[in-house]
Each structure stands twice: as structure tokens, then as C-alpha cells.
Length: 402
Image (cartoon, rainbow, N blue to C red):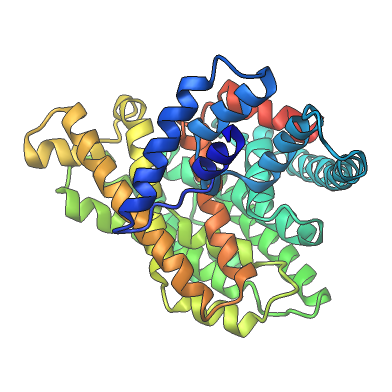
């Protein structure tokens, strides 16, 4: 019975108006919490994990690794099934470790740390882990590596807008990105020339790799999204920050859903997916599906809640929490409560739109977006896991890579 309740809790999906599911979830949570300290240790841990995060929020490969350990301690486990599960995970792990080593070597060879005057976030493990969560299947090796490389460079670009570039500098940098011409960057500051050239060369390398796979021209949607992200998102936030301007909440969210960059993450995740029809994939993306819009809202507000105080210290006053507080004259606590309601509503919308999309778009395409949401939830469950990985995240890194 306990395992049945645990399964019910872990598989809940909070779709709109599904009160019976909410009632079932409440029932199972209450009863599971009551027996956590009176059952076997391995089952108790399994229950605690189920109560901590619902199953559909979980990163699949992390759940698989956890369940293998749980299943091994079950008295009635099937030895052959357990053996094959371990072999399968070990096979996947070999892929992950090799890819992480390759990406780390590539990053060190770029040597941006010695070329740039400022300290930028170095998050190769976290970013690769995120890509692994988006597609854990061994066949998506190329996609994981490409997505990691682009995301690592874009983290440097993000830091440039947030912390290091003056307003005139980031305006010039944005203009250069819109032109996307390596021959017209001589007027940029030296460090920005290095960043632009690195991004441009990485994209050229990826384009050559895509061409070798028989998919030439597939990089253009990614370049277009980078242009949009920097011009409509990063630059606007930079202008507000330098001016100390706090826009109203609605105005902020127009820009905030762009800086959430989930459109970019979605289009990055499509690169290297050789088993998908590019035409279907990019036509669906170009339609601006509501599942991605809802996800942008969810991520933007989760991020704003967890990074609010740190951003204020850096002078980044245009934050969803701060904008809501100023506009409505409420406390931080009250603002967070209201933003969490918006997050919940858009979570439900995201689930609804996910199932609608499955009726017209191949599952492996839509799953990239849904898996990205799972990764984000894991990173920001207890704070800014990307900026400051907590012990829970570090435990996942250890279990999957070591």
C-alpha cells in the first residue's frame, strides 16, 4: 500500500480543474508523511523523495539512478532485471563522463579565463548536467555537447550584460550581434571582441559539424534567437539597471519572459537531434507554442524569487519581485505569495499545452521542452542552484558522474 501511495504522489499532474487528483494527492501526502519514520530506511527515503518533488518534475536519469539503489534493497527484487538496469546505467554513464571530459577540455583550450579581464561564471558541470537532463538517451550525444558549448558561451554573454559592460559598450555589442559579421567588430572593446569572436567561431564549428551530419543551415534559428535574446532581453534589462528604473510588473514581464531564455534553450536542444524532421521541428517552434510561453513565465518568476536579494545587491532593480512590490505597494513576502500563484497557474497551462502539442508534434521534440522544465525545477527548487549548487545538486553530480 505504501508503495502504491508513493507512486500516486510521484505521478501526480496538476491539470486545471482536476480536483479529484488534487484530493488524491493531498490524501497520499498526509498518509505517506505519517509513516515516513516507521517504515524501512530505504522505503522511508523513497517516500521522502516522493514528497519532496513530484515525479513529473524529476530529471529522468537522476530518478533512474535513485530507483536502481532503491530496487536493489527490495527483498523481492528480480536479480536479472537489477543486473540489466545497472549495466544500462553504466553504459549511459560512460557516455556522460566522456562527454563531460571532452567539453571540459574544450573549455580549457578556449582559455577565456586568461583572455578576459573579468571573472565570469564557470559552470561547465552544471550546464552539461542540464543538457543531460534534457536528453539522457545515449543517441543524443551530439545534441548534449552542442547545447553545452552554446550555453557556456552564452553564460559569458549574460554576465557581460549583467555585470561588466557599460551601457554604451553593451549597446555596441548588441549592434554587432545583430549584424553577425566578424569583420565589423573592430570598434568594440578588446574583451568584447574576444567574446564575440569566440561565440562566432563556436557557431561556425557547430555549423560545420551539422553539415557533416547532413543538416546544413540548421543553426540559423539558434542565431536568430541569440539576436532576439540580447536585443529584446539582455539590453533592456541592462538599460533599466544602469538607470535604476523599476518598471511596472506587466512591462517587466514582457522583457522578463525573453530573458528567461527558454526559447533559446528549446532551439539549442533541437540541434543535433538527428531522429527528428527539421521542418516539423522548426515550424512548431516558429509558431511560438504556448507550452514554451508558459514555461518562460514559470522560469522567469522562479528565478526572480530565488535571486531577488542577490540581484538587488548588484543594482539589478528590475526583478519580478521588486516590480510587483513597487507597483502594488506590498511587502516582499506578499509579492512572493502572488508570484507563486502565477507560477502555479502557468505550470498548469504548461501541462495542458504539453498534452495538446503531443497530438500534432512528435513526442521526442516536445519532450525537450518538458525535460528542460524538469532541469530548471531541480536547479531552483531550493534556491539559485545554477549560481550556487546546493548539496542536493552535488549529490546528483556525484551519483551520475562518479
